[in-house]
Picture 1: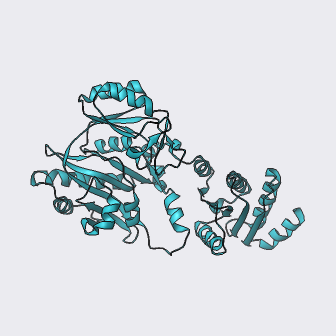
Picture 2: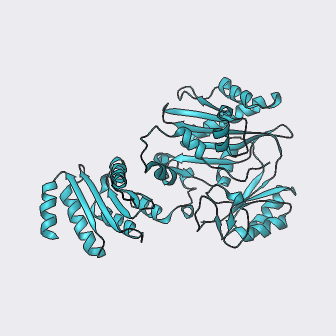
Picture 3: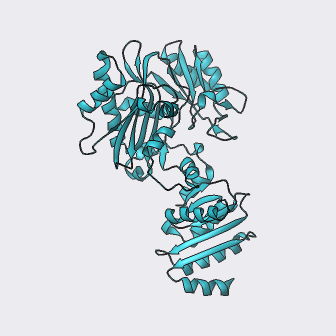
Length: 407
């Protein structure tokens, strides 16, 4: 059968580094995006490019297209899936009252009917917040029945500084629940980046998962091809749940979630052209376009810092003193007056912000230049909320004197 929804929490937990038990880390880990995510239909297209078998299907951006796709599939047993980058789609609901972003359909007419109710509407799930996310298209595919379902993911493991393949015989369900209740059901295979996934490794994983003897070789090839995508496309995560053996003994990827390394954008032009910014926080998109790292949090003290490490330490200081950071904003080495102005506009767009803490270490940038930028920005934006600035490093004395004079 198909799966209604799944999350990347297990994969993230396995790949996460060992860190200090700071109170601010869970919030950042849940909200910060370090990798490009693509829609399911894009993942399906990529799987097909690498010769991996999956149910026949195609994407549709209108109800008429959805009807045409359903006719082309040529079966009366299909699934229509809202293309929204969020977990829990099957249990979600649309802003027009339609329940479920994943529905079983039995005709092209039903495909058209559900597409009309999904496309152009916001799907609200446990991961989207109350506003939901816009559904701009639907993926329609044939419904396949599995006799066995497995879980398989290819990830980067920071502890071993290399790829790992995480697999489980208990696929097609809440894999995080499996990890909690039956951790022995999950196997981690460490891959030598210089050797890759050999026939022996892939065959061993397929056998341990529980594929029938007649499917072992197909499963081996599928696992090797998934690793090939991971390597050639600079992926950070490839998650297949479920990886199935169908009733007619075919190995199929029934659902896929891919993530790609942002640092590889320069050589993965096609993959990054698939980015859908309508699925992202508009303020985070705006920050990225300005070269800023910005994440909204739940507090009321805005943070403007240069350097991710300093930003995290600054949030720790705020929390240790009873405050709550309103954001994570790292202007990096490009802490120019223009970047500071953009940063202040982002911070102050949040009505919850009652004060701003600026913590800059002057190394690449000069403290006096930052001070001038701060003063000009405050005057230009006519800010009325308190701003506390700490400038340490290159030209800090000039920054102090010029700030006193110009203020």
